[in-house]
Length: 309
Image (tube, rainbow, N blue to C red):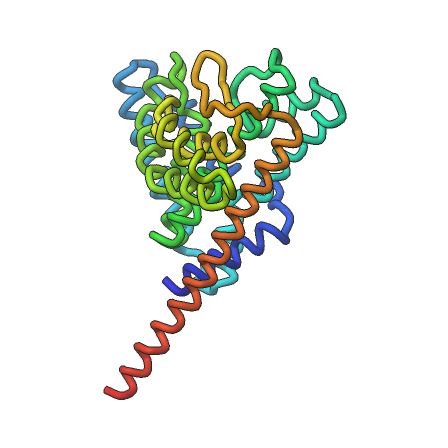
């Protein structure tokens, strides 16, 4: 565990300091290729697609975990591999680009960047406020899916656990839609991702509550009341926490409205949301550092008692 905690700290440092891997080397890109190939081979019958989706998901998770298990156990090697499966800096940068476009009154570019990096919904008719709200929602949801959950599974099950989680999450991102194309093919992947994010989503909401200075009571009320309004059993937790912490309302028309605050989503509120996410990351780093120190103390005491014995 001490090595995993240290690896988590190093992974976050690498994410902050090192450039993204090129697409031809990035493991998530290769996961996407695996998933696309699975759709090419998928049968047309609904029942068969359900079974095939489960088989291809299981094979992908097993393959990714197996490859991750072959990574050298040196903390730096583990951290570099883990870093490629985390996405905090990329997430913050994507939200920042949308924010910059809105500040420049370039709504078309803000819509394009939002659709390209952050959401799957149609952004063509979104107003500036709706674009800002969607970016904030994505920041909150992906803070859980792309940062807290990967770290959680890395600490719980090492690099193989992190790789298997990331494969499942990528499956859900590509196949987890309730439409004719993916309703059966992606059903097992969606349920698997729901299960793997059950704890991380609630942990992310708790962390947002902790950093919601002056808004903690309101944040808790909004989370408890609104977390079940989303189709996903997990996404509503961090998004509702962000809505409460910002004293705003995050709306996806025809789907949900989280929070009932009067603060209008705009570039300034996007900046505040990014600051909240940074505070969460600070708490995570402090928690990992304390965990590493505590684990080292336990190991030292164990060695001392072993020597005495």
